[in-house]
Image 1 (cartoon, rainbow over the protein chains, first blue to last red):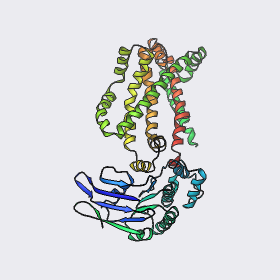
Image 2: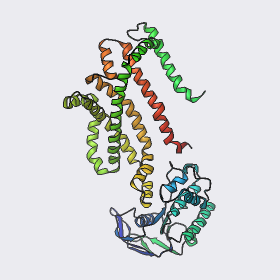
Image 3: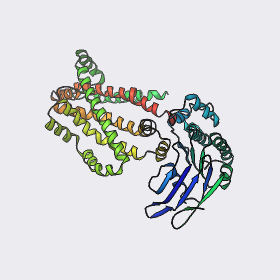
Length: 198
Length: 248
């Protein structure tokens, strides 16, 4: 179970997040929506352990994966190495099989910049699931993709989340994406004391 | 035309220019022709003197280059990553960047003595600030998103350094190395000129006193040839290899 107890987060005098208490059960898929600049990504960074300067406490599993807004790959390493270097326990055949699972068969030796944006996002997804995470955090992973590609990626993510039975915290602007992928949707709304869940 | 021929043709053009200037000068004491140097070069090579002085200078260049790159990369990286440390060390860097090479060399010889260690330390001290300045810019430009990725996926320190940080710093390290080799060997020559009894710089000093332009050219051109070889055989292939992902 993931327990998020944020009492507040500020950048200088600017209070970004207010009191946010949230529990995510094992295998539960939770979507987080809200207008731009409300603090969704800030909350994700706190949950992922990337931002430690906040009031509150987070209880999260050790096995964690994140899919950023941009693919955030190692452009100087091949697709296969992007999986194996991040997950050293992964064998070459397991890494190749994961690439194949996300539709990147025969792309093992290709560098990320040789892939299309959609393919780079598939590689990013493969990297996230290669570590069998207990919690997957996704920060608007389909932004800047065309509708068709985004839909395919959404379906692929849905299948992989089911296969791996991991918990999911999914940030998106698109309510339809949230409804398709998650069982619970929460919205961050602006308050004078910082954004809160509604 | 094959693009690989361009550097050779360019050097050939330089040689042609030198030949024309030498023929117009008509005084081998002032500017000998390239072919006029061949017998003297062969003589020095056969006697073993050229190899002895060349290897001594290369030894000093390698030591100073290795030390300057090691200290400069560490210092630049730390200064680029930690603002607090940068605030304290930046004034030092500015002081050392603006300290004339000659002052550092003379002070090292005065404080340490006319020794091999003093020579290498003097050259290293001259180059470290330049390397640190270039690497600091590289460290400041490191992608925070990749940092976050490495943090979340708990990449080990060595893996993070090798696969996330160093590839991003590679162009900066290559730039510092290239300018480093070029500058270090020039400073080594000054160091040898002022206080050593061997090396290309010492030989240039010797033939300068004898007003022998030909031998000054034989020794300096021999070392330039070595440096060109380093550039073509080591630096450029290494750069091509590390940049393969950009051009693939």
